[in-house]
Length: 362
Ligand code: NAP
Image (cartoon, rainbow, N blue to C red; front, side, top):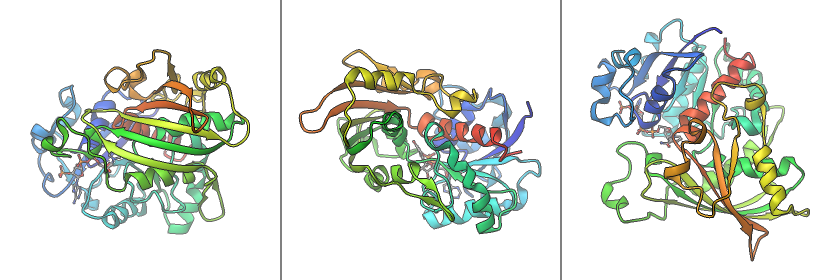
């Protein structure tokens, strides 16, 4: 298998560090370029990141002495770079959009964690197990923007896969969903580093995360949509109401979900069976970062829990539990996924593997 030389934009941040951690033994991808803000540019990586390094491993030797490039210094992109993962936090979304477009114009595919391009109609927002076919919009995007080899693919908000994948599995089996009420309990690592002040988080819950409820309520529409002539046409047939909170957990976003079906209502046993047997393209293609069983139902009444369950199958499996009948809707359950792995770096690595497999990256 060819080894692809890749870069990380935002390599010094929380998500960037997760890429470095997860890719250290990746069979297809080799990090040769790390880029960040002008504050870090021209320093060796270990000096730029210093005490900000949050991973439990030491900085891999293949990365620690790389010179950090300024993200805007496009002239210094190594000529043999196959693509970049983008995890930059800039003052405005417009700046992130423009930066990612500049890479795509330069012929570099961008696989992004940022929300900036999530609503650009011809940019696919991919969860590998749900809408892998949306990658087929890439030729339309390239034509629309005059990109030759480059393109932009994004992944959704970091908590979405935990509840949308189980919902999608049910819809696929013919159990159409009418309404969802979702309450998230999101980890502090979701706010990056240094993120939320420790005085706000210790002994506390913050009942507001800017922009998060809108993402939870709207991003599923694009993911569940279909490719149209000029972009993804949304499917907004499920009504979603969300409350998003920040809780004192290091990693792992939990969601409490109430679900009402349209007409046919499955039994509890059927739902558990649908979830445990669900598989999709990443599993069928045997992609290196695909979890073997993407949704794991946990029978114990007190699971899933972030500390015990977020790392299941490399942090890529979604765990669900506490499925029970609801007195107002039909059912309710708890869902959990690792926000910086499945919800960020790991989810984007899986998207990159899909794009290689489908021939969009070479
Ligand atoms: P972070 O820890 O704050 O890291 C931000 C990164 O962006 C750093 O590498 C930083 O470089 C770089 N940066 C800051 N200002 C810049 C500029 N003006 N030009 C170029 N680079 C700049 O943030 P994060 O949590 O890793 O998140 C990164 C992105 O991923 C955000 O858009 C976030 O919304 C998204 N995301 C995060 C999560 C999560 O769970 N944390 C999940 C999904 C998506 P310096 O070190 O040089 O400042």
